[in-house]
Length: 392
Image (cartoon, rainbow, N blue to C red):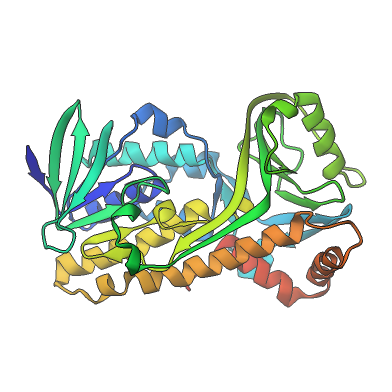
C-alpha cells in the first residue's frame, strides 16, 4: 500500500518530533516512522542538558509545561583543576541566558504526547529500510509495519534516524566528506538514587583523571569518570566508583552524596560529522549527520538547531514556493555544528587527563584554566557557548 504526506520523517527522537510539531504549527502534514516501540523511545536515557534556545523553542511550541515544573534551571557551572574550584556565572555573563537540566527521555515523552494530542501520525515499530526517488519531486520511504511492506510517498524526507539509521547511507559517498575524531578515553557514567551534591554541574580535572558531577532531579545524580577505552563496567563495583568520584571531585568543604547506583554505562568519546546534509529531497538532522563528545552538552541541542533551519526551509517552500532556504540548509546548519564541535573539543581537552601530570600538555591545560579566572572576556566566551549562542 502507498500513502502520501507532505513530509516523511524517519525517527521519533527529539529532532523528528520537534520537526513534526513545527510543521503542524504551520499547517504542514507529516508522518513519523519509528522502528522502536513507544515505550523504548520514551525510556531511552540520553542527554539531559538543554540550552536556552532549546528551552525557548519548547515554550514556543507549548510543550514545556512539565519542563517548567520539573526542569532544574542552572545559572552557572563549576570548573575545578587540581582541587581549585571556580564558578562561571552564565546569567551574569550572557544577559540572563542559562541552561536547564531535564532528561532527554522526559523531553521525548512530552513531544510524543503533544504530537499525538495534535493529531500528528507517529508509526511506532515501523522500520524504514529503503529510500527511493530522492532526486524526484516525490521521494518515498519503503518500510515494514506489522510484517507488511509499505510505501510512504512525500515531497520531502527528513532523516532524523540517528548515526546507525538509513538516511545518511542514502547520500552518495562522493557528495560529502566525513570527519572523525576518536578520543583516547571513555566515560563511565552512572545514575544513582542520591541527592545531588551540588546545585550546579562540576567539571573536574585531577591527576587521577576527569570527573563530572551532574544531576537529573532533586533526588537522582548523574556522574561520570574518565576511564580507558578498553575498560568495562565489570571492573567498577559501586564502592570503587564512589571512592574514585570522591577523590576526583574533592575540594575543601565538598561532600559527595552517595546512594544506590541503578545504571552503569561506558561511552566512547568521539566526534563525527559530514560536510553536506542534503541530497535531492532528503535532508538530515541530528546524529544522522553529526556526533559530538558529551563534554559540552551539545548533542540534543544541535539536533534541535538543525530542525529550526530545516523546518524554516520546508515552511518557506510550502507557503511561498521558495527554494533558497532549502538549497542553503547544509550551509546554514553547518555553521553552528562546527562551532559546537570546536567548543566540545575545547571542553574535552581542557578537563581530561591526556598526559603525565606536570608535562607540557598539562601546563597548557592549566594555563587555560588560570586564564578563565583572570579574564572576564574568556569566561564570557565559554558561558556564551555553553548556554548556546543566540545566532550563528
